[in-house]
Length: 553
Image 1 (tube, rainbow, N blue to C red):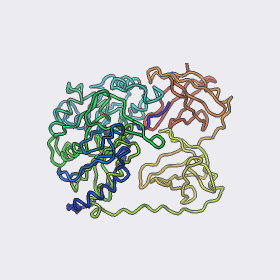
Image 2: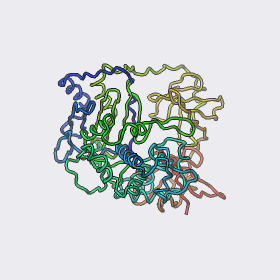
Image 3: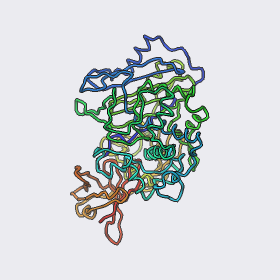
Image 4: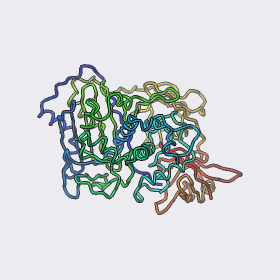
């Protein structure tokens, strides 16, 4: 049950608005030196690095490579180096769908079963729009495949693998349209829809309708893991004091698998300001925020995220797959486009892009001071102890453990963060724009996690912690099968303090009991079910996949 290190992209919004942004860039020499400083940590000729490109109004201002494209051949990164860009791919899949709608071949309001009837009918239609803005409720393909195999790296992963496991799902994460939850599955299904509607693979359709018209000659959707690509970078993860190769092992695309360069991405960004493919009305729809059925708003549109950074509007997306990290974004008010592509898993491409934006626009952007955290107040030991316990968010199954140490309420156990007490029953979470608020003096009433500023609070319910024993844990031992995962079998055994889960040849995963029938293991929440005095099965939940059922056999 070993997790994949990165399961698609986490969206890190550059959060960028000010009128009157300066149109005069700094001198070329000072610009080069300033950007070199931004990438100083990635200039080593003995390690991986990044390529960066910057353009304004379609005119390239800066391109450079830092570090090595391949550590085995001592090949340096250059602006023409080709990278796998992970979830940056999604905006191109979205564009293909929008072009088909413009052609009159489909509508984003169509039920996806019109084109992909093998997806079950869950009672509420899933539309193409739901796929585009991550509100479909489809469980994430990477989470499902990792759970089914017990490890992510086993064998190649193909589109057929994804389209085999998705129709097996007996439930969604949530009712379509009611939540935003990032799902790579939706964009793989979109790629299938492109193929079935156009009669061409997404690779061929995008090449004909997007890449060739824009002159993106180094760009393609990669649908064959074994295919040779001249100029392709390798990718790496740290291993001790050195690096290890970490390259994606899949032939599925739509959610990922775009290969491109920083120069080609700048051509794509320029198209939003001077359209050759699509038009401004189409782009406005792609960039529009998503309104959920409960009235909340998501900043994710159709393959694009909108936000603000130092007062300026930004439209962007980043990506992470294996050792690759990517970012592309633009500030429409200034016409500035930035692409950052890296081949090291430890790079933060969004932070690097922010540094590049500051070089070109820093003096004209709004000043943003570092947030000042409140000092907090003193609370009695009794007040702290009242909140110690285990809590669960009933919808997402996220478990939070609060403990006491040195007179402070800690998020987690040893090594956890100390919460900042603002008042009785109200605590600020350091390094996160959120507070935990206990709405009752009853220590078992739970709390709300309230995002700042504003936002819908998430309730967490208290649970009675349980001390494990071998006798107690032995109740869960047995053989379990998931039809939703194509018959994947897990064998559970009990130790004195944990249970172990094993499938295939992978090392066992240890899960620890946190409260009645509920365990934590490697990012999973595992909950066992009983009937007539015996355990009948369990469900597995993670951040992008909820309640996958395993039956005891």
